[in-house]
Length: 569
Image 1 (tube, rainbow, N blue to C red):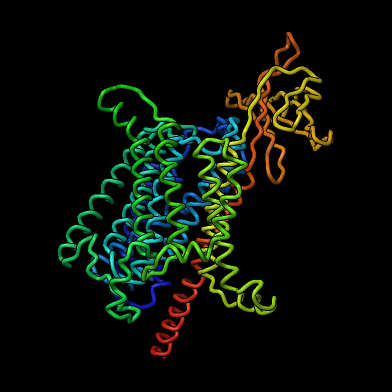
Image 2 (cartoon, rainbow, N blue to C red):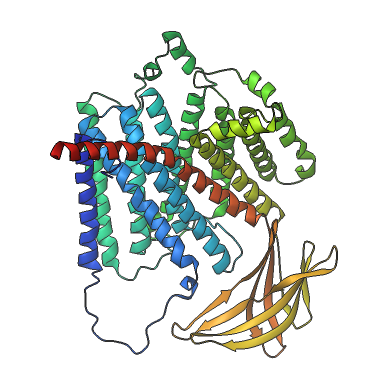
C-alpha cells in the first residue's frame, strides 16, 4: 500500500497505521483461537476425513480468491479512515483509493463466480445460484462495491460526494468482516458453513463490533469537524476541468451521466438492503421469538430482479449521456440500430414470462450498444480497415475495461435469462437400456458398475447422449453415487456434457437391487457457458481498469524512491 501512495504524506502514514491495526487483530485471532503452533493431543492412524462436497478442485481456487477479495477491501477502508482524519481532497483521495477498490471487487467477482461454478458442479441440484444465506453475504459487499466503483468516478471528476464514497468504502469492509462472522459462527444454516467452535464466532463478532463502532465514530466526528455532509453537493462544479459556470447547470440536467450514475448507485444500495433483510431477518426473528422461517427465492426474485433490470436500463442510458447532460432523442437516433436489433428478438420470445422477455431484450440492447459505440469510436466501415486498427490501438485501456465489464454484465444477464427460461428437468428409475429425453437430447443408461477407491465406494452409471435431430451420439457421462468411508457420508457426483450453448447435467442415486434400476435426474441447462463468460468478463474488465492506475502510481513511487536515494548520496 505504501508503494502506490506517491508521497510521504500524513494520508499514507495514517492509512498504514490503520492497516497495521487490522492485520494485528487478525493475527491475534489466529494465534489465540486457531494457533498453528498448538500441539495435537494424539496422532490418529486415520483422520476424520474431509467433507465430501469439499473434495473438489474448486476448493483450491474459490475460497482463496474470495478471501483475497474480502481482505482487499481493508486497504480502501484504511485509506478512508486516513482521508477523514487528514481531510484529504476528494479527487486526490479517489485517485488513490480507486485502484484498490477495483482490484478487490474483481477478486470478489471472480470468487463469487467460482463459488457458483463449484456449487453447480458439486452439489447435485443443477443450479448455479440458490439465494443461500452464505451466497448472499458475499453478494452484499459486492453490490456496495459496484456502487462505490462508479461513485469514485464522480468524486474524481467533480470533487464532490467524498464522504458518501468514504461511507460506502467503510460499509464494504464491514460487510466483508460480517460475512466472515456469519460463516464461521454457525449462525446461518447453509451448505457453506463449516463452523466447529463457537469461540471463533465470538472473537470475530468482537472484532466486527470494534471495527464498526470505531469507524463510524471517526466518520461522524471528522465529518462534523470538517463541516461537510455525506450527501453534500456543494462542490459539484467543473473547476477541476476548468469549465464555465453555464456548463455547471448542464451537469445537473436529468439526462446526464452523473444523474444516471447516482440513480444506479441508489438502486444498487436498494438491492443490497433487499438481500440484507432477506438474509438476516430469519435469524433475528428466531432469536427474538424462537420462530423458524426461511426466506426463499420467490422473495428475492420478485424484488431483486426488477431492480437489476432498472440498473441495466440506466446503464444503457448513462453510458451514452454526456457528463454535462443531453437529450435522449439524439441517443435514440444515433443508436437506433441497437434498439431495432433488440426489438427484433421480441417475436421469438414473447410467449415467455415477462421477466425473461425484458431480461433478454435489455441485455441484448446493452451488448449491442457497447459494440456499436466501440465501432463508432474506431470508425469501423467508415474508413479503411488499417485506419480503424490504428484508432483501436489509441483507445485507452480504461475504455476497454469499461467495455468488457458492461458487455460482461449484458452477457451474464442474457445467460441467466436463457438458462432459467429454457431449462428442463426429468427424473426416473432406469435399468440398462432405458432413456430419458430432454429437449433434443436422449440420455440412455448403458451400464451400472460398483467401484471401490481408497476413500470411497460408489455406484457409477455410464450413459450416452444422442442428438435426436441427426441421431448422432455426442458423448457419454459417468455420474456417481458415492459413500465416503472415513466420513460415513453419502454424496452425489454429477457428470456434465458441455457444449457451447447448453449442458446436459446428470446425477444418479442409490441402486434398487431388487429391480436392477437406478434413480436418475437429467437436467437440460442452456446458457451455462454464457453465464461463465459474462462473469469472467466483469472480473477481467475491472482488473484491466487498474493497470493504468497502478502503473501511474508505481512510476511516481519509483521516482520518489530515486529522489530519496539521491538525497542520501
